[in-house]
Length: 243
Ligand SMILES: [Zn+2]
Ligand SMILES: [Zn+2]
Ligand SMILES: [Zn+2]
Image 1 (cartoon, helix red, strand yellow):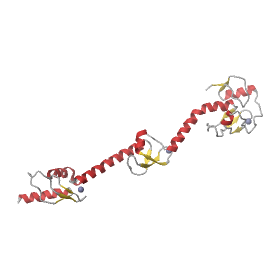
Image 2 (cartoon, rainbow, N blue to C red):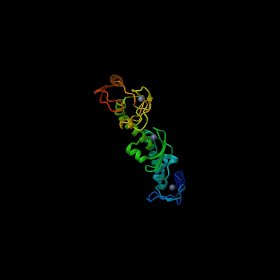
Image 3 (cartoon, rainbow, N blue to C red):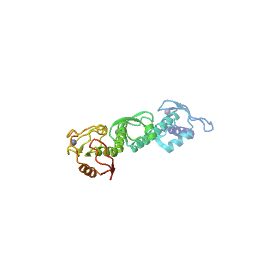
Image 4 (cartoon, protein in one colour):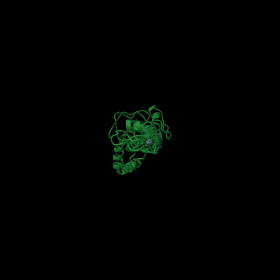
C-alpha cells in the first residue's frame, strides 16, 4: 500500500513542524492547503504540504508550519536584533543599560558613564541627539566649561586687586584661595566683592598700602606688566598679560 506509507510519512513531516493534521492529506492535484491544528498556539491553519516539507528540511525543529506562530517568532527575532543594536549604541554613547531594552520610546534605566549616576533615558533621544551624559552631569559640565571660560578674566581682576591666585577659579561668589600681596597673608576673597570695589582682605582690611615699586614687582611676578601707576589695591589696575 504505497499510498498509505506516503500518508504516514507526510503526517510525520507535519508533526515535525508542530502541526496535527485534521484530515487526510489532500490529493496532490487538489491545489489547496492541508487543514491542521497548531500544537503550539491552537489555531487551525492550512499550509501546503510542499511548503512545510521544505521548511522542515531547511530549518529542522526551529521551523513552525503555522503562520501565526511563524509571525510571532519573526517578531521576537526582530525585537531581539533591535535590542542588541540598541544596547550597542547606548554603550557607544557611554550608557550602561540596567534592564533589557524596553522599546525606543520607553523610559530605560541606565547608568551614566561619565558620573556613574543612575537615570532613566529613552533610546530614541540618545539615538537622536547622541546624548552621552545625564542631566545633572551635563549641567556640571556646562558650569565647568563656563568657569574655564571666565577663569582668565577672573584672574586678571584678582591680580589687579593685589592678589595672587593660589587655586583654580571657583566662581564669582565662592572664596578664592589667594595670597594678598599687600599684607602677605593667605585669604579667601570673593571676586564678586573685589569687582564691587570692596575691601575684602580680612587679614589687613586694606589698611596696608604697598609701595608703588613693590606693587609693580608683584604684578610682574604674577605675569602682568602694569600700564599705569599703582592705583591702590582696591581699584582695577590696567595691565598687559605677559603670558
Ligand atoms: Zn501556531
Ligand atoms: Zn552623569
Ligand atoms: Zn591683606
